[in-house]
Image 1 (cartoon, rainbow, N blue to C red):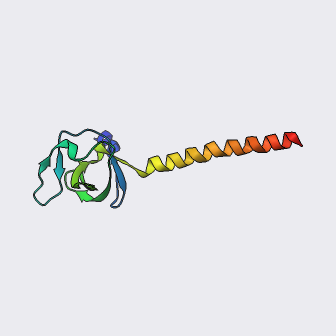
Image 2: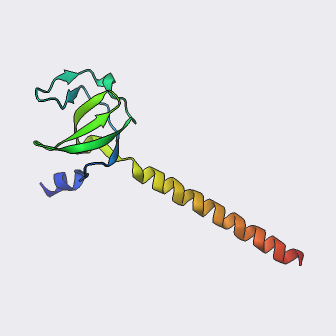
Image 3: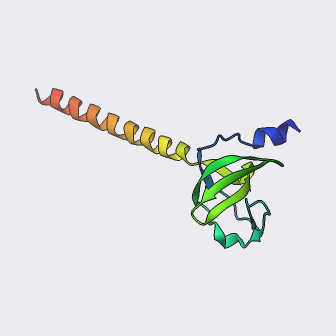
Length: 107
């Protein structure tokens, strides 16, 4: 049971998330939920967590509406941006060090 809890990620209202998996259908977050075809929300589409729902679901606002999604189908969208920023910083730091070394060797 603890393995399932480890797989589920905790989100907070307002978090930007991305859909990771293809789903057989999506369920609307209306007071009377309805099933919609899976192409309503595409893989990689980003949405915003609205709230936590019973049964291990999250209310997520996507461009075409608010849908109920399980944690296992979502990932934080902010993590990738932070990783790209870190990678860009690492790429520029060695380059500037090389330029400094070249300038010193010319003197």
